[in-house]
Amino acid sequence: MDAADFSEILTTVRTFIHERVIPVENEIDEKDEVPLDIRDATKEMGLWGFAIPEEYGGLGLSMSEEARLVFELGYTTPALRSMFGTNNGIAGHVIIEGGTEEQKRHWLPLLASGEVTASFGLTEADAGSDPSTLTTSAYRDGDTWVISGAKRYITNAPIADAIFVFARTNPAVPATRGISNFIVPKGSPGLTIGPRDHKMGQAGAWSSDVYLDEVRVPHTHLVGGDDGAGYGFATAMRCLAHGRIHIAALCVGLAQRLVDESVSWAAQRHQSGRPIGDYQLIQGMIADSVTDLYAGRALVIETARAYDAGSDTKVGPSATKYFCSEMVGRVADRAVQIHGGAGYIRGVPVERFYRDARLFRIYEGTSQIQQLIIARHLLREAAR
Image (cartoon, rainbow, N blue to C red):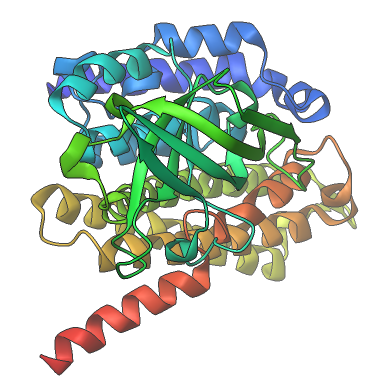
């Protein structure tokens, strides 16, 4: 994208967040819902398709551009980004990475416009950190596929128009090879969406369980067609690598907000007749948080560059997601500490962000899974 056009997008998004979203953050947290006018505005701005290629109706941002955009989106409640994050990320990239040309022409414009809200149906009750053990199954019956199983913690499921469901289609081959992906439309007979999850944080970002009881979809809804059968796991892993850089950038954006809130509070809050920012122990916490923020931002920028170049699409995304998700947790903890008792009160931004930040160390692969990915990859390379 042209640099001037991209700069204009960043400015527009930054202004929108400060003028429209930040003023209603408490409302979103209390009602567990993003206002409809905010949702509609994000569609008009093209945010539902920023990572989808321009030829299919999206903005076609590179990973480096996407990271800079997500720095801005991360400055406010994670519920904002969650509305359209799956369309751009792990669901949209299922089609980008593994779909047929016909599937791309049909589904990607719908995702980019926000006409269709998608969900990524991979996680199960006993298949989270290791999705290769999933038990949802599918078998072919003529020109249709019959899917049965259950999925857990599926983002956007309560409002999804289509769920991209991963199911085992060949139990006779190794666990990572016999999995395929299917597009399951809302309202399909046998498809049931559970009640919304009541989470610790990230209010307004809805998730729920998904149940499939012999749900039938046409063969055309097998992602990748005949060539995609059995390769769903590999597609999911490529989607998650992209998503991990995205989440890391989101953590950087939130860390910036937490630093700003901390500095503002330290400058205006007085103790013993002096701003608490005059005290060296407060200064030390601010300095540690700023250093964490700088390190996280630099890591995301470099990892996104390497991802675009194709030189690192595995270790870099995992290392970056690992560091940044842990980093924002430290920054959030210090922000609450700097605020003292006020940081523990509902309605104060850092209290809300403290709850919001905790999830980043869990989804898109836990910190422990990132450790395994990083170490095992390097040890395999050394063994060669």
